[in-house]
Amino acid sequence: MALDIPPVREILSHRFQVNSTLCPLCNQCTESATHLILRYQQVKCLWFMSPWSLRIDNLNLANCTDFLQFMLADHGNGKDLRLLLYASLLLEAILRGRN
Ligand SMILES: [Zn+2]
Image 1 (cartoon, rainbow, N blue to C red):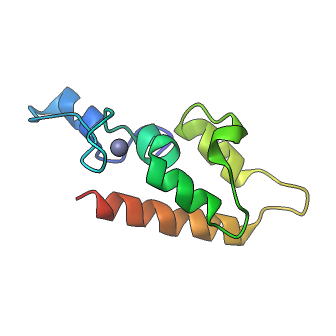
Image 2 (tube, rainbow, N blue to C red):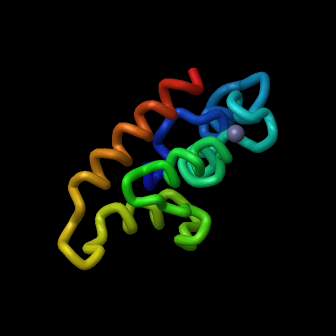
């Protein structure tokens, strides 16, 4: 993910001819990993609905690398494995839901 490995349209368009690079969920932005994980409005709501009520916009995460660093950081009580589990499940749901 930090290397933009998820098969999002932005990455695929560099390798294959694709009909559109627009996000199939909102049709408003280029579908990039950063968009799906951090910028897509519905995903922002799901981050806020998490047990941590994350306002993902307020975390100053510019890209997926920043996101991973945040997820793997010690937030005062060591790594929160529940946060990592939530993030993993959410990301899986996002990637599956857009197909
Ligand atoms: Zn979108």
